[in-house]
Length: 223
Image 1 (tube, rainbow, N blue to C red):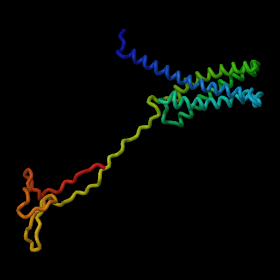
Image 2: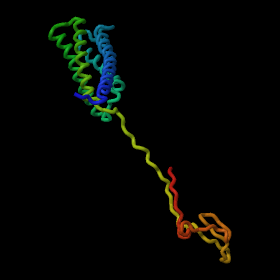
Image 3: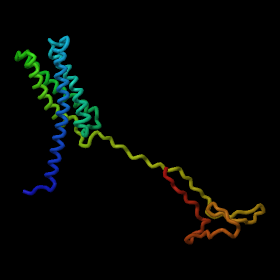
Image 4: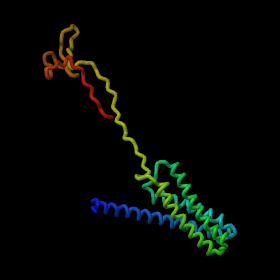
């Protein structure tokens, strides 16, 4: 078997890009994990024990906060080069992917707490960790395949500025004209706007063509 020249380095580069992307994703996920788990415990077991008897409500709130953190980090860092210009479609796909992650997270806790009867703080947190892990996998795959799908990033091309030409009005004034005095006697000649005394005008014939028949050629200046 023969391998295509450059295929090896290209695969290594693609692998490196994927590893860095995954590292950024996990870094953002780590921050979101702290927000999720921290807020959940704060609402249930923190000062005042606001939601001590409502683990699902606490979970929904913590997931919502963590989702916002995750969205900002992934959109502006992890997948910044793959954002699309169709923000409406991107937001809809984002909402669907995160809804699947929320269902997994809450479902795992509900299964552990209400169905299996594991109601201790440790059991609730173990269920949360499992749910967060499953949700992370679903979100990464969903982000890659449904949300951030642009190959070149969210770059909207702009048209080059138009070249504006000044309005130029051609004149029919001949290059060579004869000036006369009050009595009609020729006093000189005007060539291309310059006046010469009678008999001092330069030769008005250029390449065999008379300047008397040549209208001025307008020049075009760029703005």
